[in-house]
Amino acid sequence: MGEQSDLEGLVDNRLRCAGLSFDREFKFHSERRWRADFLVFPNILIEVEGGLNRPNSGHRSYVGIHRDIEKQNEAVALGYRPVRVTRKDLEGDDRWLQVVLSLLGR
Image 1: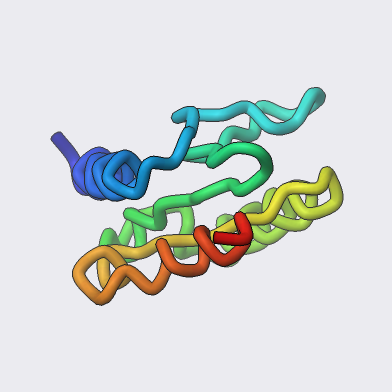
Image 2: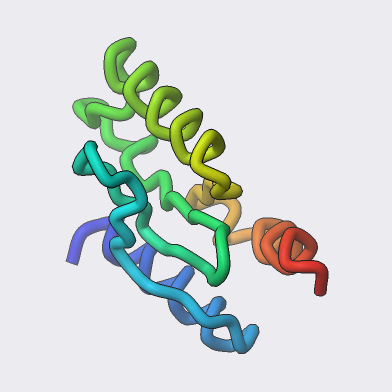
């Protein structure tokens, strides 16, 4: 299993432990093939940034960064609330999960 899948597994586990309802690999745009790693109901998209540590990751290039920005901006325009999570976040104090809970009003 690659780093992305490992990190997604950690997010999946923490969301379940928090009692949150979610879908994985959620296609959020009707015209583009964009997917978010997770949709926490009703409108929070979680993107796991697993490629940050890989030197050849498309997410680290100039084009890749702009593509990610476009994707995130479109998600916001559609009413979603994106949260981005890194390995460091998952090894830390789960502040990212507190942000998700706060966005849900919990």
